[in-house]
Length: 526
Image (cartoon, rainbow, N blue to C red; front, side, top):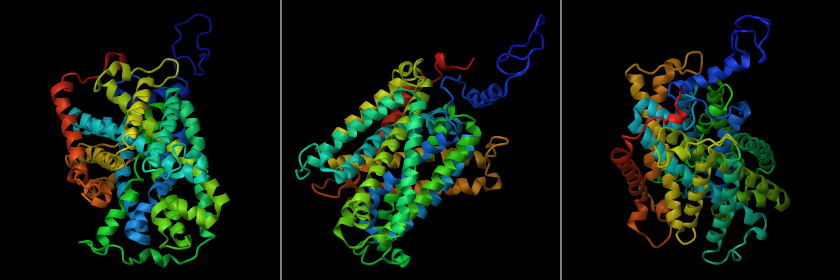
């Protein structure tokens, strides 16, 4: 605060910080306004506010990471539903848009670290908040490992130099090499995130710029090589034959490829305590990240289907977009694009790691984790929580190691991680809907508000989240036990694993954690 002069020489002179005596400088007033939302949770400001509008937008869009997701999962969608898989992209976008709009209201009112955890806690109470945070934290560590595995899909196609373990023909060569490459990436994200949010944001923003430019150029190049008309995306062919629901069953399976990509937009608000003007910028960043991802990703998928020389080529269902790029654009241009995909994977892992750190910090600040005082400690040198950065990176590497001898189990766990994120989102939208129905929800005055559309949007967000969670968890052998040996516990892995994580977590909360929860003294607002 600017101190008021009490008389003597210089009375009424301008304050050294730029404001008149007794008047806060504009920057200081804005800082006070930015920190005001923390008072509702009883927290004092600790993290440095250095992130601008583009930084928060970049955090959201790099978590979604269009190039990472589309290049990693295009093969899956095409293999099950053919070109018609494209329609799952706008379907998932519309559903996630309903969720994002609810999040925008929350981001405007509560722009705090660990957004999903703090929102569910504020809306549904500490029990629901802890469970939502626990589910999200578990899912984030698995997601970081899953993103790191994407290096193996791309780098060896650029050069055989990156196939360090074996020559790629051995039964475990690819899995072991994926662990090696993924570990290198996770070590990098750990170091960058530990050294401060400003360094992370600068690298992330630069990477997002490269990703966006590469995506736009890729759209133009694919459009210039179109070999068929858009009518192909309404042809079902023989896909779905033999399934009880026919093509609809095949389409719902293929839609997982889109559902696995379009989430994580809440990262823009999870960095709220390190952002400037978060109540205004976070909602914009959420919507811009989601809408830009939908538009760019949809065009890439569409033009890839229209440009690939042969829609029935085995390489299309095996290598996906990598195959399309290399066969359509040639080796040289294709490799340049693949290098841009590598950049996208890198910043995606960086954003996932950063979001996990803020979530762990937010939970530890409430004494909700073992060794909370250590996890919540902000490094005076780097201005960021270092312990959760190291811990999350270490756990992600351990999860990676599972992939060497048990790739099916890893794929099951990865799929379940996405389900847990969708369920964590439901733990925000459901109590928010209850509050609306009881007339107890009030958006932040002067900031983002859905107005009279709030109730129908919230209802659609809940219906969508529940329906897609069920679709993701459905015990399909193609997803949860694609190759032998076949085990019932793999096929029903989603229900079993989510039940164990949720049940075990809730039991831990009631038996151990419940009496300890509360803002730690070192982080409490005076």
